[in-house]
Image (cartoon, rainbow, N blue to C red):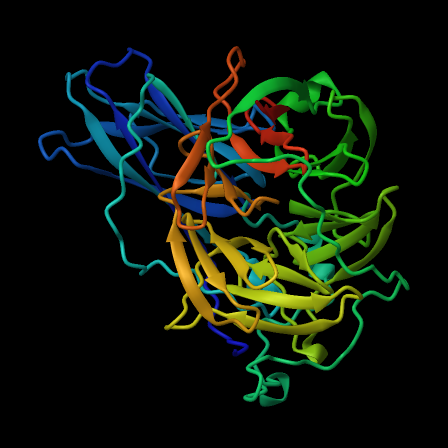
Length: 490
């Protein structure tokens, strides 16, 4: 393992493929959702596969989902704009020709920061977006309807102006030799044992729950019920349920990344409590993207504050894990964490690595992307007795041993994964936001089950995350309809 430092670049690239069929409605459109930072300069390019049709697809409208007043529209096409506010923007593409042609296209969205450095630079972080990765041919997302909704590229970095008050403000931090505690004998990076949690909270070792029902490979799940996560009608313009997890009592924790709220529901949808507020101070949330439950404790991964927060079940903040140069710890964009024995494993999308802590928050080490074992945009990690399962944003799952040695890879053939779980029965689940489906896989990548949207929903669903209980109850968060849907084994 190595702690790897690379140069920062304040830019991001998103790519979306789409198809307008030849037989399409007059008002056909395809909407993509991207989280942008205030002040970002955003440029759009569209490549079309049909050489006979030039300028057949354009970006016609851009709208901030949390404020309909922030909207830009140009029927001749928008090629660039500057984001006036931070938030999730709906980017609408439409056909610009009446010719009865199938229009296959690739929309590239390139975001740069004009006046501000990238978030990672403010923290002395270590992030280098890789735009030179090998472009493999992808299956086009062929629309079966004239109006298509594509999920956002997970929730990306969003920062507030107050972040100048953050503890680490150097423009860059060199990876000094004294920060690299390499141990050749064990191939484990061992930093200075220094507890990050000062609150005195000591968590108990994890005891894996046992499955209460059989779940064969041919198991069928049936829809049971749905409930809304909205606390008020006005929330429908802002809410974005990003993660869902079963709690200790069999109820559901739901994380709303845009409202910066955690809500606790019964499986029938009765809200028991809620907490969380936006900010950069202790106990506040910048851009939360994932939660993990351990006993009565809740861990919240926060992109914007570059932190992993710990709350108790009453919503009281206990402490946070952040970058600590003295311990050789650099935390940029933490994703969905997991627990294995007395360890906590944290994927870091910014550093393209996996970090390990004990249950007191002491940093134990990390392994990062290498030429032999590349890790690209890890969003989630899960574990069993012997292995770590790292899900990348591109749908490729990497299997490592706890020493950081790559053992195998599984391609799920999903273009953009937003939710990932490893269940009690040894199979994997993902939310494929692009194709609007939840899938179950075996360990060889074979699809065992696909779950589509429940019927009768107001909008085509966007499944962002899922959680499976040991009695076979499955909860799926739906960002488009601001709901949670419950399924059960038939």
